Amino acid sequence: MQNNKLLIGIITGIIAGSCIGGFFPEAGQSIQFIGDLFIRFLMMIVMPLIIAAMISGICRFGDVRKLGPLGAKTITFYLATTALSVLTGIVLVLLVQPGQSGSQADGNTVNQGIVFEETSYSIENGTVTLENLPPGTALNHSHSVTLLDRSITGKVSSREENRLAVDSWMKDGKPLEQISGTGKGIAVQKLMPERFLEEKRTITDILREVITGLIPRNIFQSMAENDILPVITFSLFLGAVLSTLGDQGRPVIDFFNGLNEAIMKIIHLVMYAAPVGIGALIAGRLGEAGGFIGFLPELLRLGKYAFTVIAGLLIHSLIILPLILKIFGKTGPRKFAANTSPALLTAFSTASSSATLPMTVECAEKKNDVSPRTAGFVLPLGATINMDGTALYEAVAVIFIAQINGITLGVPELSIVFLTATLAAIGAAGIPEAGLVTMVLVLKAVNLPIEGIALILAIDWFLDRCRTTVNVWGDSVGAKVIDRFVRLANHQSR
Ligand code: ASP
Image 1 (cartoon, rainbow, N blue to C red):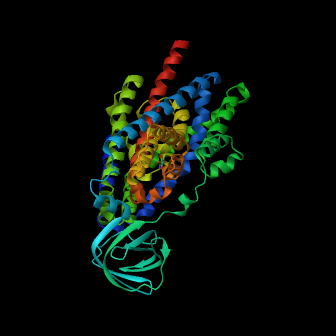
Image 2 (image 1 turned 180 degrees about the horizontal axis):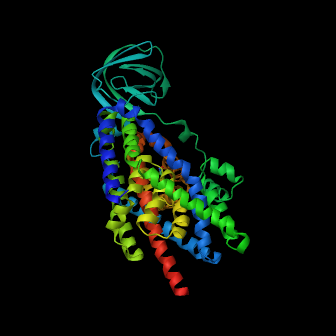
């Protein structure tokens, strides 16, 4: 499909998906399965793609000794851009101070969740009946409600229209029983999922896991679990050894070359489904968030914080990375970005760098003229360890949580945030909301309450999409710049 046609198709899909999910949340949710099909198609090709692309790429190098410098350049590039990105985030969040609310009322609103002052309620036997609750309000078993006039909070166990079954009522940290009566004004807040509270690892544990995880215990298990790093190591070894075998290795190399071509063809076909798949994913996710009525108040409540994250991501992706691309990759950013846009929009809709990998490889090789040998090596590695957007987001979120809690972080703590956010992003997998989990480690490193995550949870699905797009953009720019270095080195050695 022509680039322009595909792009117009995807943009139409996004607009249609946003309208369906935004205005008719239930209809949006009902077409979510079409988006799931699209993700499944992408995930289906990720593992074969990594193996075939890496092996065939490595064998094209001719001399395995060239892999060392390529690996070193790739890791240096990734680390440097991630660090730049974190730095941008830290400077911005310190300047904007999103957590230092202008008025007490703002601060309360952020802490309490979304406040509905006009909503009246009546309670009987733990069942709360609400009146004047705006239709479409996101309120289900993943929320708690606070009755503002009594300052008591309970967990929603189920919802039927405007009737909520609420249990575990608490006041000032003490459990309450037998509540009844009527009143006015409620606040709704997302509950903290167990997985965050159970996260016991430290940043060193994560790094140790990344390093030991490089070597697969069982390559098939790693493939089945979509664990990319061990599969990269296996493919690297196999490719390197095959390229030294001479005639004996030739048929196997030919097999992987053929497999690689076939997979690139499949990706090309999957691209045709991108407009519908991307649109359905957006419709589904927006529908799940209660449409515009459910999502926009959450976004506005955390507006300053969301603005800081998005502004940081924009500075990194529209200024810093394009400059790097221009200076080191000698490539015009505009055309490069237009060519990469199918991958970027897929990243936005799937919130997963790993699921986007097939599109990223296709755009790099077929549209941006990155040689398959570089793309095959640099992009799978980037999808798992290079996360500029995630690193920036983690730093901003952690400092925001400190500000909300009235804690000022000094230079030593900020340096710890800088380091741990960079490492936590390396440790995050290329799957939805992985960055939120590794952020727990950054919070712990500077002794901040992990409960702070509950504040930003409601809009994380949206920011996840924004940061994943920047993650994939960073990988793509990296592939182009490194490819130029490889070409230059080859030219010089001739
Ligand atoms: N979803 C992101 C990615 O796949 C990771 C994150 O949660 O930040 O790149």
